[in-house]
Structure formats: structure tokens, C-alpha cells
Length: 384
Image (cartoon, rainbow, N blue to C red; front, side, top):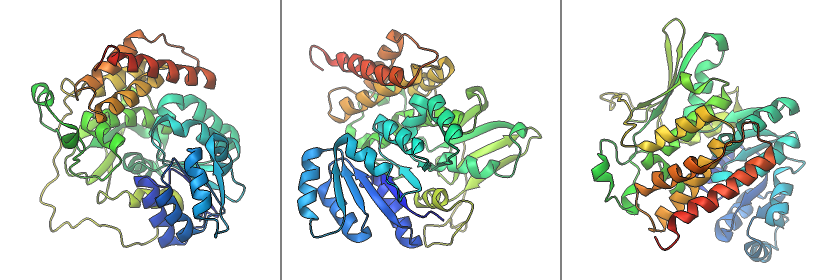
């Protein structure tokens, strides 16, 4: 069992559910990190009594410091404060659940400090997969997947030999626009895109699910987590979200992991592995489950899938450029500055103009991220 947990992104969807898991299991939460949500993190501090808490936003951190001055929690601020919180000596594990590349440098710092990582920030491996996996091996720490799809694969391959794996099969719900044509997607609204049929997630991840970029990012994440080429990773649309992923072995056997669409289940497993502990979370009711359906993904309508696989096959800094463009494009869409289909147009613009560095170091990743964001924002130059 974990001795002390640090949560990077404690006020988000995964972070709040992780704290619920910690509450159920009496896991000691020693540090919390968020961006600027003073109200929620104050409630978390009073409930879980961490020794330190940090906010990226320095103004919000000062407000929090005043709000919790009657507690023993030490409040840190800014990037330096965040890095201090995730490397805090009393934590042996860091759950990284912040969205986007904001999680990259804190995750690297935590690994450098010898912390095990429960990873829910897929962009960390998408942008810097080789750097992260090499560092994990060098430091001898453990990297546990939190995403339901990667947790499913992790469970399916446990006890099996890597050389017997034929392919990984990631399942996708299909999002709110499953079955739509490109013509129908031209007029979708932000409100419609945020209405996911199965999962309750933050806005960025929900839009990624609607474009199916989320599944493309997960393909790249799986490639690094399980050391398998992208050519051996497939996607299948499974609208019920009951089978979370599958592994096919070279004898034709397929192992699938099933569970209710409840993120607390993979979060708990990442924090307790190899132990499985009973809980009151949602369970599958097979009496009410009439069927399980599977479909091929529509790569022509949902171009983000093709772009993600293209980036993975190109390698080097291309996945980082693609991810940066996607983050900016989703932000522009949520601000109603571009249309839904223009999200992939922004990504294509950046990928087309990106000069790939095939052997990047960390500074190359940071430079690529910055330049790609600038180019993506230029899509709106002259007015969106």
C-alpha cells in the first residue's frame, strides 16, 4: 500500500475521484497540486490535511494561504512550488492527473526524485515517451496506468509473456457523434460536443473524445507504456464502454477486461496493485446488459485518429507538435472561435509545417511545444 500520495491536479475530475478512493482506503495524502481553484482545494485541505499544497496561479495561492491559515498545511505557489510539492519527501507515489503538457515537467521531477507514478496525464507520454520511459528505467521507479483503457491492457498482460502478445485493442465509446457524417459535424455546438454518453470528464478530454483524438493519444501512450509498435495497436468502437480494452495473443486467444464505466476502479488499482480491495463502486449488472456491440472506427470522418497514428509512425517531435496543436485547437473551439471540424484543420496545419527532430532531448520537446502552439494560434490571425 502507498505510504504517502501526492496528487497533481487534485481539483479536476480524476483528482477528485482519486481523493474519494484515498478516503475509502485510508491512503495518506501528503501533498496536493492544482491550478487556481481556491474553493475546492481549501475543502480538500480541510478534509485530507495534506502537509503541503501548491497552486500554479500565484495570486490564487496567496488567497489560499489566507483561507487556510488556521490549518497546518504549508501553501506553495508557482512552478517552483508545484515542483516542490510533487517531490515532497513524504510521498512515495505521485498521481499525475493534470490535463495537457502542464504535467510533463512535474512528472519528470517526480521520477527524478524516485517517486512511483500513477499516470492519468497521457500527454506526458505522447510528447516525451522515450524520455519518460528511459528515465523510469534509470530511476527504477514504477509507472502505473490510470486511464481505463491502459489499466485494462495492464491487467490483461499481467502474468503473460511479452513475446506472446500479437496486438493491443483499445476500445472507444465513439463519443457523442458516433455515426455522424462529416457534413453533420459541420454544425455541432460546444454544448453538444461536451455531452458525452458514458463518461463524466473535464471539458478538454470530453472534446478530445468527441473528435476521437483522445483515442489517438491513447494509441501513442500505449505504444510507450507497453513497448509495442503502433502497427500492433488497433481501435474498436464499443458504445457500451463495458470492455475497456483487449489483448490478442499469438495463439488467437483474446483477453478482455470488463467493468462499469467508473474511473474510480482503475484509479484504485493503480494505487493498490497488486492488491485488489473491495469497494462500493459501480458494478456491471449482467441482468440488464442485453448486448455488447463493436464497430470499426470511421477514420475518414474522425480525421484526428489518422493524424495521431501518422504522428506516432513519424516519431521524434511530431507527436509533441500534434498534441500542442490539438490543445490550442480545442481551446479555440471551446471559446467558439473555430468550428468543430476546424480542430483537425489546425492540427494538419501544424503537422504539415513541422520539421521533425528524430532524437529530441527535453529542451527540444519544450521548444516544439511552444512553436507549435504559436503556429496553431496563427490559424486565427486576421480574426476567427
